[in-house]
Amino acid sequence: MSSASNHNNHNHLKVLLVDPNEKVRHRLAGFLNRLNLEILETAEIPDLIKQNQLKNSILLFSLTAPDEKRIQHFEQLKKAFPGMSIIVLVPSSAANQHLKSLEEGVVDFICSKNDPVAIYSAVKAETSRRHLKQEKEYYLKNLTKLKLEHSRHIRKMLELEEIYDTTVENLMTALDLRDVETFGHSRTVSKYSQVLAEILGIKSQSILDNIRKGALLHDIGKIAIPDSILKKPAQLTAEEWEKIKLHPVLGFGLIKEIKLLKEVGNIILYHHEKYDGSGYPKGLKKEEIPLEARIFALADALDAITSHRPYRPEKDFFTAREEIVKHSGSQFDPVVVEAFCAVDIEHWERIRYETTKLLPSFDEYQLLLKNKNSSSD
Image 1 (cartoon, one colour):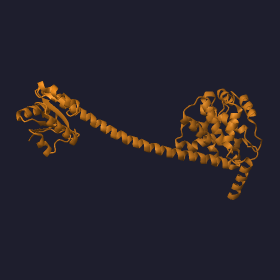
Image 2 (image 1 turned 90 degrees about the vertical axis):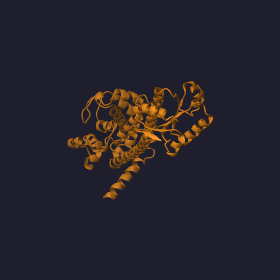
Image 3 (image 1 turned 180 degrees about the horizontal axis):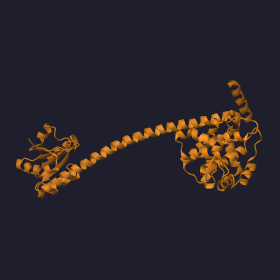
Image 4 (image 1 turned 180 degrees about the vertical axis):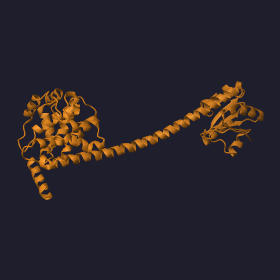
């Protein structure tokens, strides 16, 4: 057996020339050398089997006439070496006689043994096919890896989302326990906000969820307001009121490092802006105020009007609607007011009931708060 060299990076792809005529083998090997592949020559296949050379190879086999035993041998070789390709070299006049083997996949190409250009083209085509197959396998392998990584990222994201939601709920609960006026407020106003957002055409579930989170966290800045001001039973001084008005900016500052999504931060920072520009902290007006903050402003007012306060009893939803309509264009965006009025009062009442029915009564809550303060003294 002789060897006419040249290795490359095709996973040691070899071209195996099998022909009893040594001159024919040398001539064809010289022609195929330009493909820069490893080329091995032999007179018989058994020599290749002994040398374990059939793996990942292109076998060029000279065959004069159809030979049933040889075809069966090819079938056995294909099963034993799945990575092997077979190119049969036949006389031009006998090419059609081998068509059945090509159709059945026993051989991969049929070429005239007297046409080196056709043989060269067949070997080159098979080499390109193998290269594309390797690339496909590589990309499929990496795609599988990427899918696994994506799944891990999704699981991690869901875990972080759960932690985030728990943190939001805990912060909101902390506010409820600190300020009687926020009793049950955050849950209710977050639901109002989501319903209004949907009526106004917001379909994205992620944005609706961000609005919910922003509503839950809207008053988080009050954590930084002293109890002496926040719980003061008497009227606030001008200086104290200015400190209260800082809570949107304080709240935004407290959690901006969490890299909050836009809608969450907008509600926290701008929920006290008014449509006519008389609100705070920036005195924005009309569309300068983010839509989610304009939505929340109405939801916030609806809950405030219909909720019990130490200094006044709650009002019914019909009265609340009258007050909201009265301040359309001044405190509230008229478009948001219109969306609110498009829903029956009974629906808003039902939302209020559904979000507060698991909470203790206001009197029970006051007793809970009193006991908490007593135990901390």
